[in-house]
Length: 252
Image 1 (cartoon, one colour):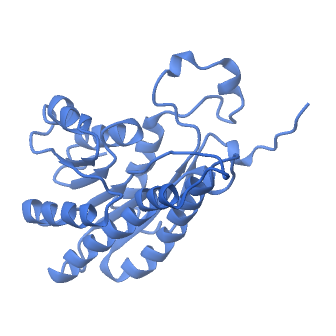
Image 2 (spheres, helix red, strand yellow; image 1 turned 90 degrees about the vertical axis):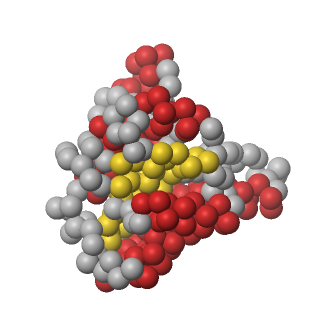
Image 3 (tube, rainbow, N blue to C red; image 1 turned 90 degrees about the horizontal axis):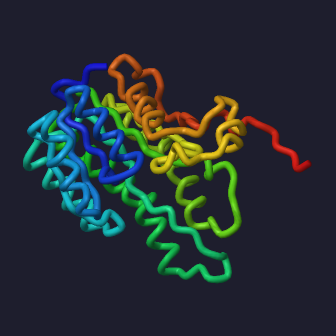
């Protein structure tokens, strides 16, 4: 798929799923902007993205802070005028016992995983409204999780944040519809970012697809949703989990 000339923001692009998404868009010809609180993102952009696309760049920011979200977008618009695609991937996977959960930790998870997506998306549309870019192609993909549908003990903040991401997605799709910008989300299941060759046979076989997911699976889903031809898919959540949420599981 060709994304030559497209400007793509990938938040949380320093590692894991976000890193693979950024790499795949650069390989497809896009100018990729990586935003992350981890300075590994700068090394990644310099070492792997710029050899492919010299204009790729890195912004260091902690998107749990509202001011960081707003400053990031203003800096991007000053340098690049506009964006074609936003992959709202940044988030934290921090779990703790319900009995040890604090208001501060709850707010940090919700601000990182949910509020940041809202602020970045809103700043994007404020810029487009200001510049009257009403009919210009635009795509937003929010990374949610299958944990919005099911839970384990001690995941209250994370699960709530990902449920919010899916709900926010269809709300933004309605608000952004007059501006030719589609908004969809992806709910990954088990995506193994490190040590894939160390997984057990049972890990793979429990999936209907016969394997544990890879970051490339989520990147492929992003490509599908951001394709210019796919503007009839809007406000939806795409589950990428090898079929696990459709499988009935019983204890022996």
